[in-house]
Image (tube, rainbow, N blue to C red; front, side):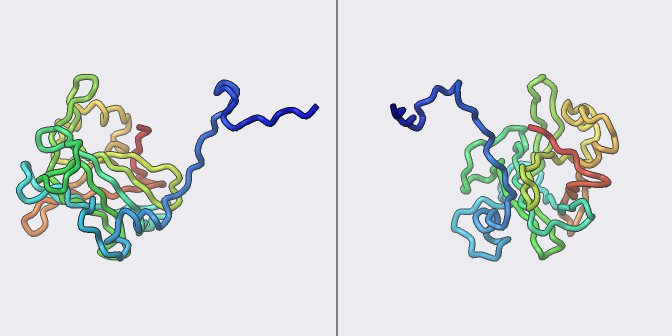
Length: 214
């Protein structure tokens, strides 16, 4: 006797094996869809990009710049970076609105121009309370997408002129090696009277940046 065909979704979940969705590298379409200027395309009227703070935003205005370097020591010229940070008062602005003076979320990318640097125009964030109750040092959360990177990488940028706060940060202090902690510390520069912090992200090899499993 012919058995009736099993209909889709008719099996109990307990009898089904749920498989992990396959990962894939970011490829060129990340830039085409999310970093139009970096891809050489016309930008949209409303674009989430690297100006996180307008001139009237409260706080110390800074520029953050850096490069992305692969395991061979070569520049990664098509990386895509997302940033998430608190405002000057240590509060995250969850509602994104281009009309606001400051937004906690921003995007940037490396290109084949300007030394292959990514950059953010923002304000220096305030300290944020950790779930443990301790205060985390001022920092910017960074998420990196790039060709050859199957799962995006999570890291942080701290500031070298916040030494006391860095020493007490419950997240930064979890990194046992002082040398490894330094891979997250951005160096302060002054360029044409403006404050700039520089952090180069190294994907592999000597001086590899610390990445978090958030």
